Image (cartoon, rainbow over all chains, first blue to last red; front, side, top):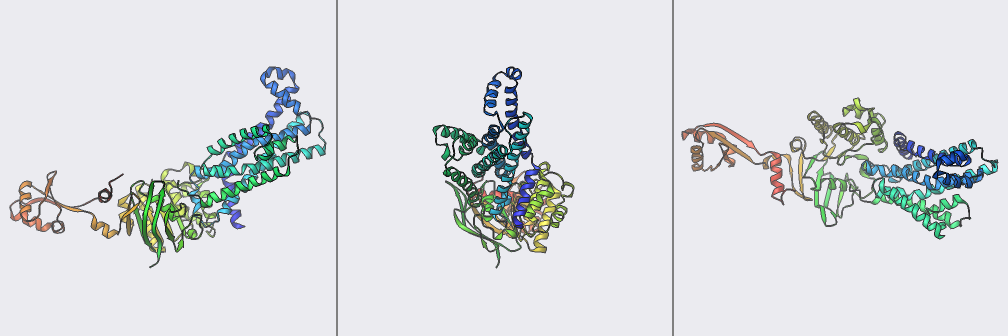
Length: 259
Length: 306
């Protein structure tokens, strides 16, 4: 336990001293604020007309977010898509930076179990994801209150918060394989490329009707809440997260570190 | 004999390239063993295999009695290392970087950080971010991390890299003190050959992945070629006299070069010979081959330089 707390101290210190958490926090602020701006623009036709093309999107967003329930659903979708990229950034930084900065060497021939080092990294990543999701939710709620959206009963709010929280947990799980991709790619570029490709494939797979079985399409489908997902979808998400963590562990323990 | 490091037929191949080829060496406890080689000769790959970072294609390595395997944990509490360029977390201060190293070696007391900062002359930079350190100070930080937990074995890749002359002397004295007082074993690679001759007890020369020679430092000194340079007013006449007395030599830059052991060990006899022949020498100098020249001659004779 002492070893794990020491490893957590190391990972938290590195994260808190860097600017990446600030950047991801700023990124997570922009998403709900952007959506709120579009809704605000759509509700104010004189501004909407001045905005030209944006007004088309604004109308679409406003149409889909006429009350708290749909608005919080939209927030969950923000986390499933935009949040996913922020999470990939965080996980790539926590794991890939050790390779990009060459600091991984200092962690390989040490008496601390590799599992403790990696567990601390995963815990920090999860904490980071949770904080970003909470931030997105809080900003969204604040924006919703400013726009005086209707239908904000406690039941609706709790349901919406649960939707956001479960979507965030799913995104956390499907982001875990990116720790392995960042480690194999020894940096940040490969995970970003793979994340972009993955989201494109997820869209195609979802359109084709198989989204419920593709790990990276599942959080988005869940956030939309149109159709109930089969239990297998949740199992796929959990297994994807576990496979990502196990793969990262095996890579750190058994891969040749020859650079 | 207690071998701190022992390798047997240690080999690493990357596809068709053989980085290390059948390396068998032993390093005794308390010894400073210098590993010499050109860039790409296999020094760093050997270090990585000794540290369990790279899996050998063939052969084995034992460090402090423990068989080294990829991802193993056993000997590392007693091993300090610095492989290639030292790296630190640029956003953390010098002190925080050492704190990270301390926590990666459970059992190291918190006060070790402060004392290592003092010992390596980093007090002025303790609260400075590692990202802004000069190369020399980054090197000191790397060494501080390697020494922090008082290891029994130090594996150091080019420990004097980037250090100024004062820093080089300081690190040399520190390593000598560690071996003499605490019996620490040092396995180091270096390209500063003069430094190696001052520091090491034993030297291994690696070229194209193969260990060409292993010798103690006295043997190395002995193997370096020496020559006697003779200057005289009539150098052609001096050459004739020496040649007829069994010391043939060549004239380079106005000086007669004699390579015979008898001439090198007894320049007084050459002086007498020349005086008696009426061509007294104006200068007699015994010159030793530079370590660099010796090294290049050795690797050149074994497949040429890279």
